[in-house]
Amino acid sequence: MNNLAILPIIIPLISGAILAFVHSKVSLSRTLAKLFMLINLGVVIYLTLEVINYGTIILETGEWVAPYGIVLVADSLAAVLVLTTNIIAVAAVFYAPHSLTEAKEKHYFYTFFFFIISGVSGAFLTGDLFNLFVFFEVLLIASYALIVLGGEKVQLRESLKYVLINVFSSILFVTAIAFLYGVVGTVNMAQIAERVQEVDQQGILTTIGILLFFVFATKAALFPLYYWLPKSYIVPNPVVSALFAALLTKVGIYSIIRVFSLIFIHRPDLTHEAFIWIAGLSMIFGVIGALATNNIKLIIAYNIIPAIGFIMMGIGFFNESGMSGSIYYLIHDMIIKTALFMLVGIIAYVAGTSDLRKMKGLIHDYPLLGWLLFIAAFVLAGIPPFSGFIGKIQLLKGAFENGEVVIAIIALGTSLLILYSVMKIFIRGFWGERQTNNKLEKKPIFGMVTPVIFLLACSTILGIGAEWFVPTIESISSDLLNPQNYIDSVLKE
Amino acid sequence: MEIIISILAGIIFAVAVYNLLQKQMIRIIIGTVLISHAAHLFILTMGKLKRGQPPILSEGVTSYTDPLPQALILTSIVISFGLTSLMLVLAYRTAQENKTDNMEQLRGKPNE
Image (cartoon, rainbow over all chains, first blue to last red; front, side, top):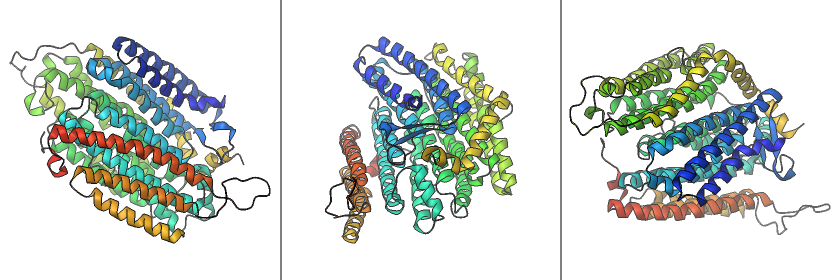
């Protein structure tokens, strides 16, 4: 029964290994990848239902009792995020064959794809800080392979920067863990939380907390550490960009949620207050980047940064509405960012360019694509009844409960500008006369559009069916605000 | 002993950061190698040095070496070893394709 917690890590790992052996047979590896992904999704749905109905599942690996061994903790937050990851992965695995060339698929795309899923699930599920570092490395190394897949000139150039910044922040992560181990003498998150609580987070502990925040903020691309993100996220294939946008930055923000709702919670005047300002600046600078460019891929890549800002804002408030808003927005953003990156990939494919100045009138040939982008822009900006609206309303409620009016105004203004930045693609790319040169024939896009429709449907259900999801999200956020529950369930006291 | 090793780790950190800030690709990679060494030394120091005892705890044993930092370092060394070789290959290919190993020239154009 407890072994259920490790399945979302093990199944993709084994699938990736199997797919490495059949990498030269493209159609076989496509079928197998889809099959394995659906099996994994089934297992994860079962896990999530178990966790939500019967409470946290804890696996003590090798029967080493916590806090001595490594524990995997499938609490409701982790389970829900693993489920979202798998929904995205299913969409991506169906999108991939239409978007990638066969040569890329042969070069172990599916293997690394499954390793990323495995690493992300592991990072969500682990209850051990050093193990979190290891899973970060699993997903990062797989991402290094995916970002450079294809080996073009610009890809190599940008991936070198991406690898360097991530290696540097990983080493800082190890250093921060060493500091923390030197002070509290453990790497089990629940036990760290207990010991930090005993000494009331004095002196050096807050400094270590901020060092950890610096590491996670680099991975999550928060202001002022986002400079590496936009350019490196636009160079790989659209399906790879979609996965990165949906998963990698979100693992960083998840780690911030975990560490700053469990361990470093006793000096909110030093940490959580600062988060609110960092969130505000991330929103402003991210959206300025999105407005300033004519490259459709860059517009969407810059839009990752304000979304991270929104999530960060709720963590800064650290009240029930703020936290549940953050979690809701996190799930919503994972889904919609994947859909948008896929849509932009299709637009760049049919228009033959990603420069907005060179495209117009696409609506004549691709009406479905145009309206999907329109809906996706609405979802992203948080127009009711879509899912972004529910998350934002909770976040704003959290803001007004804490009396933080300035950040609420910044958030609302940013939402409008986000809507404008994506609508720009719709207006300039889809409106206007049909382009007259005969070079652009109509290309079949049905296979690529289906996964996007699936993701937008998920997002709409998340928005319209908010009544079904909100109780779960609220119970997750009240769990996060009472870290004693987590500590007790792991250490069994 | 711990103080000396901490200072040593600090010096290596400083040298590594200096190297990371250079423009030449290979120097940057040497910087990441050095910084990972510094981090590993630092983890070892955090587990207290030179107790002259095996890392075994059983009944009646009162002094022992902490095995956890060693396990952590081992994991971390393997990872940084793999990453270094990956980075070397990546840097080699990048330098070949872009015909330069100067990071200043690898910035990319503003409106690409």
